[in-house]
Length: 114
Length: 111
Image (cartoon, rainbow over all chains, first blue to last red; front, side):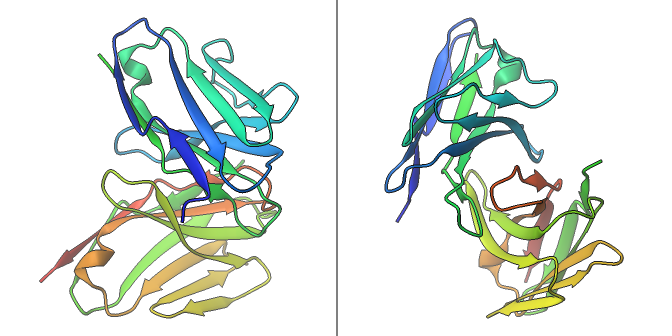
């Protein structure tokens, strides 16, 4: 079964609103989680690395004030897209490092901004 | 810099073998992955290989690594319609570091 969940699985919102996406670990306390996004017909690109109890590390070109990441507990990281615009429409996926040979990916959240 | 390249499309006949190729640039990559993504779905890890290995086989899947040329391939034997998907090649330096993905290869199966 799934070990990393995301909520919601899809969301449609109006331009200018904020959307919060949760990435939850169901059975493991993860110190590090990663947030990726995938635009239509494109590959996945890392947005930021989320570390529990500290500020997230953002990739070049990703606005930290627009994409707020909170990793307040070892089982939950949230990504908030603030003042969303149509160009933010994308597939957002989190992954979790568990100290194993591979990371665990969530099922993804599809965001459509009208 | 970090870069992973793949061809965008591959079409094979059902029952034939599919070979998807990938090249990467980061010589410090230790983990090399193949992920599958079906339409509208998330990522499924198919297999991975360590950089100190040349080959890994798992049922219908065979991964070949040429570290000198930084070339990775995924062979799917006896390709079925259920194998239709986008296949992403990816690499990371450690299992805990960010994963760099290729652009994905869309595999289509013809009867």
